[in-house]
Length: 590
Image (cartoon, rainbow, N blue to C red; front, top):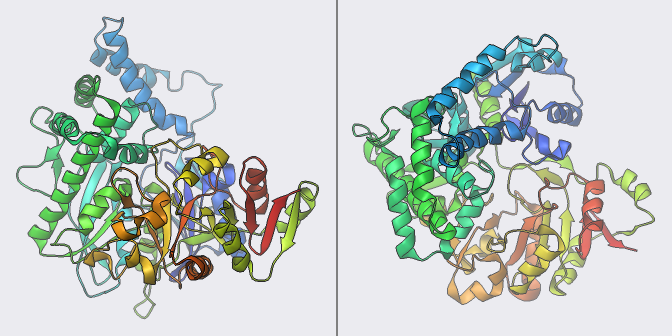
């Protein structure tokens, strides 16, 4: 049985499931080379079919994570929503006297009037049109956005079938809702609460935009900046922001807007524009790091309060997280440290790109027979093989680089790391999602803080305050970090939590620690999930006594991570990286 899942929103993706296992998954950006590419994932679908050697006729089901028929054409579609809202406010403030609410309504009327007025303009395409073009429409089914978020976490991460799990989902919005809470048990999900308000995730996106970054993409930069602010000023900013979000007075699992904005819903109406106007005015003169810190404090408090309320109401102490809000690894850290939480895990890269996973999991549950095996999920390296185009690369770049095939590649890589070389690793199958998990990573020795500037100058061009991440051996991780009891069965193989670095070890991996708060967004490397990457780190540990290497994604600034050998060599030649590895080839400049 083959089930194809797709996400057509931000960061479009395709996931192919054969029987009870995902066998291929990729984001459209990796193939189109457009960061966070939205829309119908035609390239990803074809790559999935090619990987398994099947045609669309052999698919049993095609499912979408979300019920909307609207398919964005570009990333700009999402950004324009912000530009338009804040553009109206700026015009009102700085030159136009026309009421901004009236203009907001008039724009909608003009848009309606324009429909069908130009017979020569290209017809707007909807999901049904794309599905029909690719001969997928007859097998198609859609699932609710937040149900897909919950399904990815429950079916992917719940290890004890008979136990109850409390599943929380939150993001900027999908299918009219911004959050939901579910109980999962015995292979079924029951929704117990949901919200359609201007959520904490929406607030985070809007502050991201106000600060000059791209919403639904750069929120992590504010999270990284936050620890540098002075706490007393950050608290003032937090208090100012708290007036824009809150919990329902009758149900602590439901988000609502404060009494000042009772009618606000996430994406509709004039009341939302009133809220945004007041928000913009409130934060306009706050210092940038203070605003980021106040926002992060509020985000953490809200997350903790929500999870505690869920546990108190249901008595369920096993917690699962999904939705873009939980890409906030600092909030996840505090959740993992709650004494009420017995177990916690977060679906990897839990933005909308992974709703394709939730969709295929739901479809499998609906199609499976009584004796069918349970869904198996335990590996996120599900994309193309690193050397799928090695023959092309050997010919195309023979005049620019030297190729050396090595039998025991990790033995050679360890020597480079000990010599303080920056190594780009393109090996095995490409990881899905926002985190580099070793197979498309830049790795280095972690004990010299100067390596951060060196890597940034060589390739990354990251904001100066942003930390890199450590990848560490699962069986040696407690040498380096404090791991809460709630994470000691699952650990954090996908970089979805931060941890406090142990002071006695922190100098040994100082380049992988946030310099302001001494936390680490660790990838805890399991030998079964990542055998080759584990072997590399273990060899480094045997030579140095440090069970950690530095890990950051292998890409040029502003571009997706590399796909295969040709991509990797292109990036290598356009950077100052020292060494490139593609599977068992060591590649150096001539």
